[in-house]
Image (tube, rainbow, N blue to C red; front, side, top):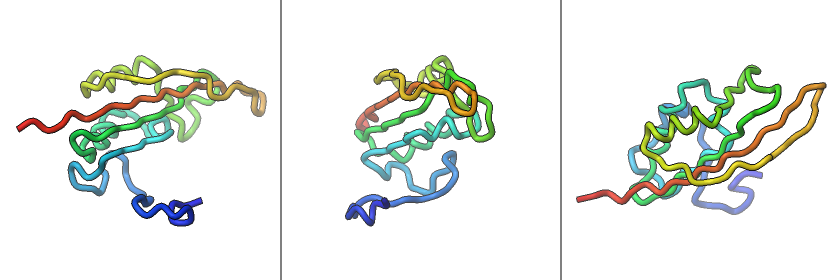
Length: 130
C-alpha cells in the first residue's frame, strides 16, 4: 500500500540516485534508509553522506541493511556489506554504530544457502553549534 492509500499526508515516494538526492541541505527531521545499501554498488560512503546532508541538525538517521552470509552475495544487484566495511563507512563519517545483529532469514532456495542478518543503525545528528 502507498502512503496515500494509508492516509499518510506528510510522506511521499521519490526515485533518484542515492548519491545525489534532489533535496536541499537539512530538509528532513528523520531519514530512513531501509534495505538499500546492500543494493547500491560501492563505495557506500557517498550514499550515507547524502543521507546525513539532507538530515536536519538534531534529526535522526535510521539505517538498516542485510548482511549476507550465504550464497547470494555477488549476484547482480547485490553488493552485500560486511561488518568491517560498515564499521569503516560509519567511522569515516564519525558515526557511532548503535543497534543489533540478529538472524533475519535462513533457508535454502534453489539449492543455495541464503542466510543473512539485519544490522540496524540509528544516529542523532548533533544540533548546529552557533
